[in-house]
Image (spheres, rainbow, N blue to C red):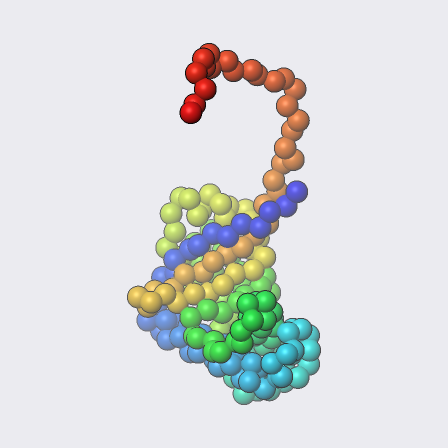
Length: 185
């Protein structure tokens, strides 16, 4: 049985990389807002959203092909959640962007991640401890979210699949006698 786990890793970008990340997060949020306003509010299917705005997302916001697809998926998912709650999606803020395995590479030996931003790939150092290193050792990420926190720091939430062993059936039963004589009142 497989389980998807998330490991949160703090990023240590250079000042120039921080500016590139900010520009990318703004473009990603602007693209989400554009898609949300352009496509009819009742449409929640990411493929339908993609068919209507994909080319414009690429040309207007400078996103890569995969990032434009991630924008459409994000808008569709947020609309589905809002619909379940009886609300509408109002606005996307420049604090989060989605990645999948094609635009994200985890470099275990270097202790970094390679992310596709607006001007190409950036190799950004991770600031992680043994806990994160142990969980990420030998793993291939399936997806991730690039996040900007209120204090201006950045982190990446890396998802990967983990094989969980099937639970075994107990072969013996242990009986415990607590020698209770009074029943609780």
